[in-house]
Image (cartoon, rainbow, N blue to C red; front, side, top):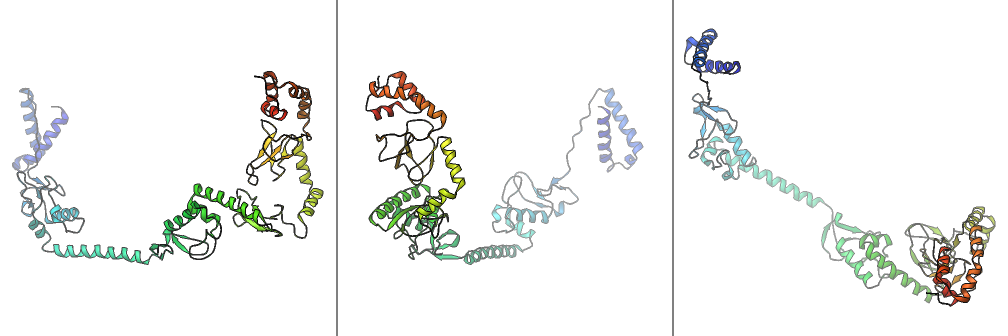
Length: 427
């Protein structure tokens, strides 16, 4: 035994012997007594093993030691075969409230914390001194009050009746149109889907189910989603084209605003139009800025004569070898391929064909024509002249593999040259 062990032994024996031997309560006498015992252990070559065991029981709630002094106020749980105690009624009450969430409504769930045996209800009732029913009644009142509060909150929330299914819904579950009519989301979505799937996309069909106000493009896209909205736009475009062809006094207008492409039919002679989707303002006839007091031709002439920036921009286009679409005026650049171009702008949508070399509008793709080469940048002109002889030879004999490779490097596909000249290539 080392010094640390001896010190622990002295402390233990002091606590143990103080209660039985008044003579040993003096520290000096006790120290001498311990030294004698230690000397005897050393001589006998023995080790001292001390086992400490509390003299009493532990409270199952607060872990307080229950011994002979306070055993009278303790509550035995009559667990078998073990004996478990609560040190007082207060600990049993706290444990019962904890097990039942402060309600005491389900006393069968009040169990011993150690062996999980149900505690006798009489013990619990005795601990609460007959006030269990009062606590249970208060718990029921609190639960009922909370339930009523939830129902009141539910009733206070604004509701409406759907104009299609006539069901009652919360306002936050509704879709409110620009005409201020509300519908539940499933009903108004189904209403739009059925009309679009059956190609009924005109303003006479796609409108508020309650009034006659047409639905806006934003409302349709937001409700039906992008996939069905794309189908709506295709049906809408087809209907507009048919209507414009049948009516000589109307034109098909497609907005040129940024990311807009709104379509509608406008009567001829309207001087200005504001797009209902993007608020872009323009002349619907020439699709340029509004020009009150001038015809479209006069305004075009005015722009050419006075717009220096436009002239500088056109010069820049010619210098860089760029070209405008002959229909919509969109700037086009050929990266590679043959000279036959297809404009895919929002206005032309792949329906305009033209030649990149001369800028002439064609009636169909790869239409043969007399190509008068427009003014090209210097590097492209030199390259074009250097290969005129080769192109002429191709016209007489066809294209051999080496010529095909050279033509393709020019950015003019050999297949396109063959179609123009009407001769097959060498294989």
